[in-house]
Length: 607
Image (cartoon, rainbow, N blue to C red):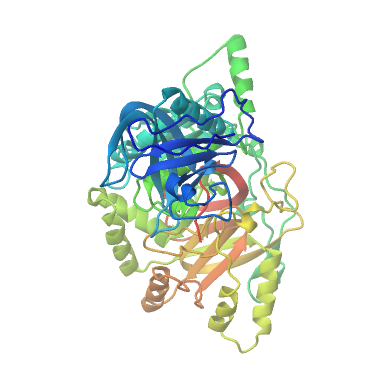
């Protein structure tokens, strides 16, 4: 395959050692050549289907075989194709023999770009580039072609993306964040159609009015902004394209039939409702397009739109962080880093993400029963969480710091709200409850220590998220069924907050998130009820949230329930719901989770 020759140290030292006219066959092809690596010196480069590797000529002449898996030296480098995103011919120019010392030679060059993990932060990816030189331009071009041919064989990598940029997200740096990563997409030969939004709600309007024909031309949509901006894009697509039954409303649940000691048990004989039962064809939150079509055109467009629905394995969402919290990015990539997110997108990484459907039945206690729908990718919260968002809106000029100021004001006010929450009992949680009762004199703290040792955090290639549910609803493939046979437990009282976490919601102020062992795609919500308690107790809870390896759920006034669905009814003075950072007023509300409803350009956090 390769003719071995002794290297020269003059200007014509490289020989073309590639066997000519070798047909490209990925399964058995091994490609090798003497090249010159900029800043390193003369190397022997070898390529097969899985990787590109090189070793200095000096180590080979000293008796080491570069093709041997048992021969490893400091000068040997391996770059897997799964970590390469670009190979580009850069024409004639200087190549240095060493980084600081040695000669420089003029020759034809090509650059290979890939990624590597940060040495200090395992979840952070950094770009790396290697420039190789050769006296023959055709040799360089041949290497570029072969590498790019292998990259094109990876069907998971995107080729065309729709990019929406929020210039006002976080500290108002959305455009600058995109500028820092735009070159990476260009180098990876990923086409991007970029739109910079000019007003709140524009992203929702764009995604709700886009045709299925145009959507099919993209491999995904990328949001450059925060969690709220991502929520706009998510709702713009799902409100019109995700067809599934509603969860039961609070009034559809029967009266309690027994008390099991830990809460009231309810039974329901109603099936989850279909959206068509409400008499509304479209969500009230979805603005209808004023573009009217007639005749065959209209029928054809309607038929096309029906074809593009969710779940959709081919279409993925991307998120490049530029917001105030960026909890979704931290939970799905492990880092709040724009370049890490961009690199995972161009490499075609993919992870499934649970999505919660939140249905408001009544806006206020005197409102008519008119269901309105929102989707959430991270969190929906009432009470403290809603009050903080409401208060922070008054101080937008402060930027992200407004949340700290608003949070302090809301904490000092210490408002509680009367409400009733019903949730579907989960078999595994039922067993845990029974064991907790059987512990007799054990305190909640001791029991929590036992449960903490059983926590399994969500990580890249998570076994829990990769495991498919044993059975799902035939009507909604991503929904785990609950209806006639489901047992509903009820909790009623005064609450400082009611929260439902879809994912752990890790962020810089809560390093483990609200629920440390929540998963990206296990089909469950984590319902967190904070009952009214003294100021000092609630402060302890918040301090535990802010602590690494803290125990924010291990208090008597905190209820934590893993469930696929819940309902909510407020009484008396009302707060507002915070759905992924967006305000949502509701007197009566239901929520359910859809397992792995969307696919995200991400790989999950490293351990």
